[in-house]
Length: 420
Image (cartoon, rainbow, N blue to C red):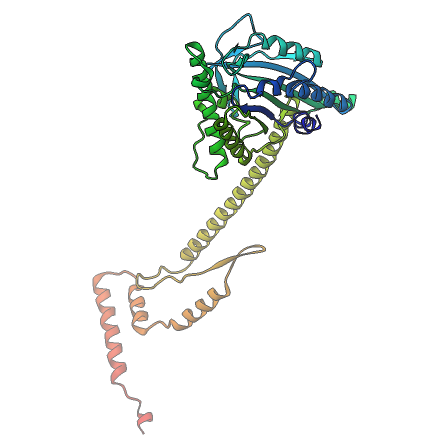
């Protein structure tokens, strides 16, 4: 009893999924282990009792809500044992979060232990049983009794009004498997033979899945979809759950006992990844998105501020470029038109406290260039010629002749004082 309370009740009450199932050959005591009898309850009645005891012990801290469902897998067909008015085939679906569920499965709200036991007894009356050579009351189907536990922190009255809180949701799966059997040993024929074939196939897939999960390797393909049983229990097999496997044996068949022990060895090597399942209510979701919106608005404001700073710097750069181009054009207009053979000096400027300032290197280059330029006499004479006023042709020729005569006389005269 202490083992069940520690491994099942506390686990499911804390928001962690849990699964218990019994595995073994036919007539080895699986159904008795799970259900028990009136004088000695099995795993399912004890687990239910421990769940309600856990809720009573933590009633001051948390609020609990319990729901139950009961399904049967008969010849690979899923039926609802609590919905007796509408016996239809149910289908397995998967939501956007990757969680597997049975569509249209009825979940009943319960408030006490007696309610759960009454629903359990009612569902057992619709389950398929039959008599074989090895078992007078042999289970011809697999059943899954599921208990969903939801809990929230109570807090004070002020915190309950308008306070965003999270809800812990966990599932407790109590599985009673049909036993593997040989047609030769059970003497099954007709419908019983067909039932045994479906039972053996689903148990073989379960053994294959657990063997794949127990073997190390990242590229293993797990065949969950080959059976309805493994598909429904997908999260319990190597997933988000704590799983306990009870293997039952009988000394009647030695080979089946060895097979059960090999299954137990593989199950011990299987590793699950349980975690606390928390679901946010509407207020918690709104609070989460409001916080996310505030963070995005803060990031957007920072981005806009950075873009504004970049735009202002671009405007300053364009203004400085305009001032630089204007200063170069002003210097070209104020000076003489340079000849094509003369290269323009490259000048540099930098930003000073009062605007653009010419680099001292420009002044040094300008000084060296200006001192090296000395106008030649031929250029001076040519300028004088072009600067003469425009007159008639005779006067022009006379002035040219006089200018030539004056130049020749100056060349012939030799100062006598200097020769002496």
